[in-house]
Amino acid sequence: MEKRLEGAKVGEILDITLPPSEAFGEFDKDLVREIPLDYFEDKDIKPGQFVRAQTLDGSILQFTVIDVSDGIVYADFNHPLAGETLRFKIKVLGVSDEKPPCECGGGCNCQED
Image (cartoon, rainbow, N blue to C red; front, side, top):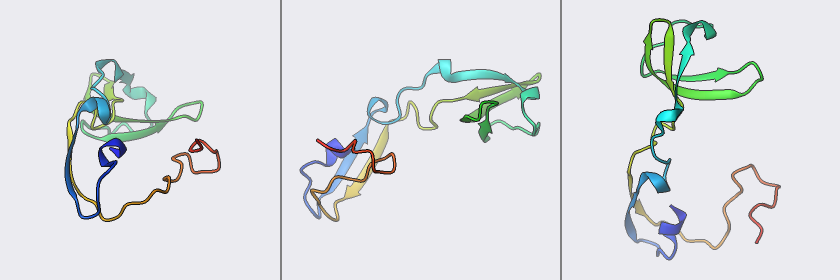
């Protein structure tokens, strides 16, 4: 997105289309997994539900439930917008030469040249 905004002027209206490769990536069928329903404390899991779960090692996983059948939860670990082309209509309200704050929360110098 940033590349598409470079050189834009205040007041300019941009129509930006991002293909999956420039947004959240292509849908990856290998990121659809089968998880035994017994692994979940809450057994009331339904298709379409977005789930945040903590693994035994403390990692947080997020997925969308595709189906629940015969004691198996079919979990899609793709980003919800994976495989989608995104379109934005943007009006430029201001322009700055300042670098944006670091995505990691700052203090790491990863934005330095």
